Image 1 (cartoon, rainbow, N blue to C red):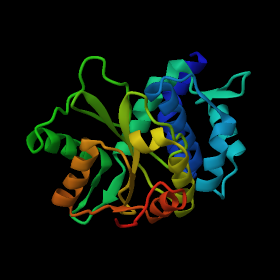
Image 2 (image 1 turned 180 degrees about the horizontal axis):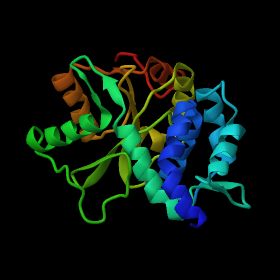
Image 3 (image 1 turned 30 degrees about the vertical axis):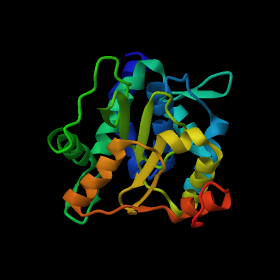
Image 4 (image 1 turned 45 degrees about the vertical axis):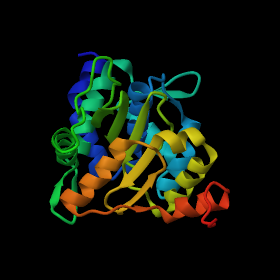
Length: 259
């Protein structure tokens, strides 16, 4: 059995071990690399690009230890250019395993407790039956994992379930919504990124369903429908992030002046 076949066979057990040992940062690193390689079609990410948010979201964990752990399991490789990447031969199987773990995570909403994957399935049906919009990806659809693509007015709107986000980059051809926790310390870092990058503000959003807050400055109609669905069906009202609002005011991007 070659190395890749061995990793594929052991992959479910490896991910279970990471979860059992509470290696949350390792799972976030894998999510960021899969997003870079599958969704954004990049060759990988430099380790230094992951470190700032790793330090904020996981202050009790050593980033180098998590990266070495993943290297030891063979789930990622380090190139001579210091680029980290999931090996091509295990990329899609790993994405499927990660997707299953993310979609089966349960979340408690005011209406009931359900799995995140079921929530997105419900929203897809809501779009089709209540909003009369196309919930089926068309030919040439954007490759994704761990979520759904919904098209409206010829544009792709992606809803993706993610661990704490380490890759904060807008998609060139789609609106991107990450369903992810926004840790209190991380909210300031995300707000700073939003204020510094107009493309990020226009095309990327975050919904923290458990925290009941959102960071969304896009003009995505699908994300508006998603908020309406959460309120009407599950009695969950998302409030704008106070940290983001204050940062926008401080940076002169938002004003409450009248007249």
